[in-house]
Picture 1 (tube, rainbow, N blue to C red):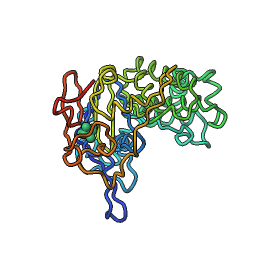
Picture 2 (cartoon, rainbow, N blue to C red; picture 1 turned 90 degrees about the horizontal axis):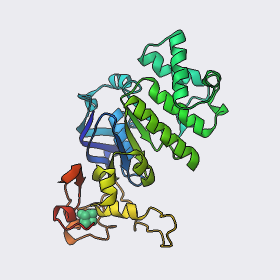
Picture 3 (tube, rainbow, N blue to C red; picture 1 turned 180 degrees about the vertical axis):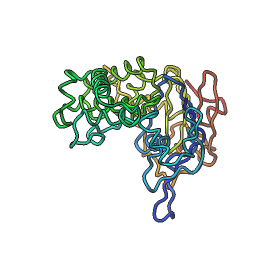
Length: 324
Ligand code: SF4
């Protein structure tokens, strides 16, 4: 369904004098009905990758290379007008902050109805029925009544479910969810994730799930791609990657997840993520990597394709020295 190949998105600041390589050679595939987790620290390029796919980059950002094949069409070659038709109908987004996605001045009915009105050309009673059904599918109680409400009359969890209903209203084939549960408390978060899974089972929609929460990846995703400094440094099926991470950064990320009942101090990855406008030479992770070897500081490793659909980008992997 989606094939991203060598995607490069740069930001040009100070009149182009400074170039920030926010996404630098990202490749992955997504099948129909599959869920891919995109994980990494803040600033690793997860959100910019998603915004590049749907053509929603800020003014300073530009896709400078690579391709995004979605159902056979390269989205990087589409005009903004063509992308607008694709967004909402074939690809939908769920953003972190539901209040930023909802218009406080319009009723829930109007906001959920809009994509179905424009993309599916529904009108009158059919449109109303569709909105009622969508609200029901995201577990909004008494949908007939609640569709007359405004966003401020709903709780945070309900608002996020409304955003889910809007995303589904155009009948998309792919939903990109960017940290959709960050602002929800833990119990509401779990209910929302269950709901997304149910919807996916019912509709067969594919999902890209952007998160820094590895617990959510384990619960939600089939495959996971770990990003660092604008690159995917490891990807593969979730279970295999969690059981046997090949890349030192993935190992460090997994090691920093709190374990219930453990008395061990929490492991923290040393140092800070790099400045994307001034990346270290060689492997961008080398100043923080506890397993670095001399060549890491001077030569950049490439992708190594492993059995089971796994890919890792590290000299230890290409030299067969990685530990489990
Ligand atoms: Fe660490 Fe070197 Fe592998 Fe980079 S290439 S992750 S620095 S061992």
